[in-house]
Amino acid sequence: MQKQIRARALRLRRLLRKEEALHGQIDDGAGKRYLIGPLFVQCGDIESALTHYVWFKQNCTDESGEPIHNLFWAVALHRAGDVSGANNKLLQTMIQNIYLLPILLNMQFEVRDIWHSSSREQPDYFAEAPPELVPTLSDKERSWITEQLESDRFRRVEAEYISTFSALKDEHSPQKRRGILDRWYEFQHLQLNIVG
Figure: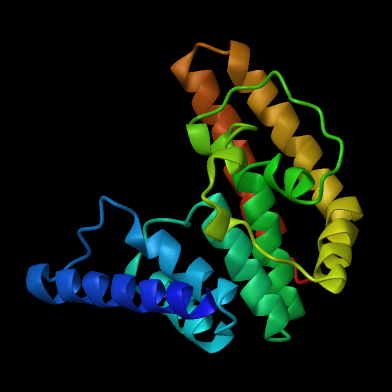
């Protein structure tokens, strides 16, 4: 099974690089760029996963990835010993979908009555993921994720997220919505630049 997953990751990487060479840019409506890193992690090839994530950061500068993509990125960094980088990427994962990590760990969670800008932020997002995109975690990794979720930093960000997107749910003034989002982006930026 790991050989098949690795072969798929290599094939997708070749296709993506071919598109880049042909068009001079990435033309990836199918989302191959989000699958390659996770597939490399799933087959245990952390070096190739990290190489892909470096490529992603350099070539997809206008996007932050998506929740499962970032979850695997966090796991790859953690397995490589970059704890600070892993914690930041895990926080980014939680910001993109506050339900994903509790669902992954089979924890109780509350479905919030808040505004969601996309289906990636919904509670059922992770349930719709194909089996090969559900990470196999060690007990140590599960403990690490639990510790982060229970940390002051993660709780503070989650509380601010819920407050922000609750406010957005009932706010219809474009100017006020912009102000709420600007404050959120500033807060988020500061939190993601804290080492820890």
